[in-house]
Amino acid sequence: MISSRRTVRAILRPWAIPAALLAAAGVSGWILYGIDLNAPAAAPRSADAPDAYMENFVTVEMDGTGRPQRRIEARRLTYHADATVELSNPYYVLYRVEGEPWNVRSERGWVSADGTTVRLLGHVDIWREDGSGERALDVRTEHLTMLPDSEYGETAQPVTILMPSSTTTGVGMHAYLDEDRIELLSQVRTHVARRRPGQ
Picture: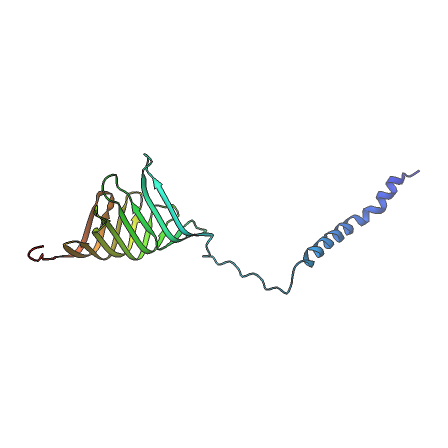
């Protein structure tokens, strides 16, 4: 005598695969029912599209003693998939243990993926103030490459250095901000303002 359980299995076995396919088709149809096939396809993501961005970005880095070492601001920070960062209107403040900080501002900025190189693009302004808030030294150039860890910057572009009583121009610059030292590389000229009697 044949078991009724075996009979049922024998009857259902040929239908197992078609039933599974029919169930999958039903699920697929249910999913597609909720999709508007006439809707325009989403535009493909551009390779240079940002992964993330932040408006009015501000950060302060501290040194080993807990004192502010540098402050970085930007109107917009854009983070890319390759880990590089673009900055709109970046502004750096490099604090000193003694004396007034260095200030660095540019139109645009780019930061390497490892954070070791910063390119300040467009017009670049570097300055220090005296104790009264007046600019004691003002350096103006374009396209400055900086190494933040050593506070070193360089450019091959024309440079103008403004001081209260003189103006110096040149082409190319090495700036050692950690040492408060700036070197102009070529075509250096200095104009000293004459003081009027009684000044």
